[in-house]
Image (cartoon, rainbow, N blue to C red):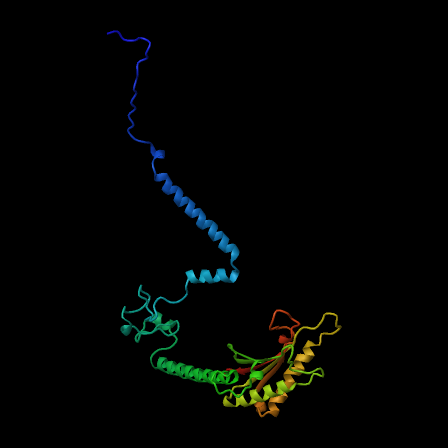
Length: 289
């Protein structure tokens, strides 16, 4: 049978693929994903550094570099356990920065502050001081509760409580008496209002439950710059000394008043320096030292 010579033969070419090179695999995707993740973390870090304040950044830095001791009970040793034993009942608590061994070496004894019976006496004195300090803080807390009506038996009327703010500081209990736009502490003639007289009586009666010394501080708001002379110093001084005299008339002993200070408009209570809220008196029940 004859073959038609006009039809081209069909040729099938088969290509054998043994395997792809490295760039055809999936390993580069993992590396690229790690790179993208690292870049995202980097830009996120840069954004956080730009969006936070210096105080916030310092707090973050302190969080990752804590200064709290790892071992709460230390025997004063220089080993990895920072003591003589891994059991707290066999470890002598370290006093200050010195050694605490009952028979210390010359090097340890040189760095120790107290040993033997001196340690016991010092610990007893510290406990007594802490006990007295705790009792004093409790008395100041009672004064605060009476003034703010937290105990449910406050003698302070509601209209008076609106003008009283208390806070506890390192110096002691601060009782702040402040004016408002509708109820000032002084009238147009710089005379104390009935509100301030009533507040003076409340402070004098409440202070009788403690024996702490008292400091009186006067504050005013700012005055217009067009004035030739800033009267805030004179006014805050008269406020503080006038309230001292009011407390004396209400029965507070003169020897309990430790100081009378005028701050003028240098320590505003609110952002607006001319706001009436900045006119205030601060009575500080000082901590017993």
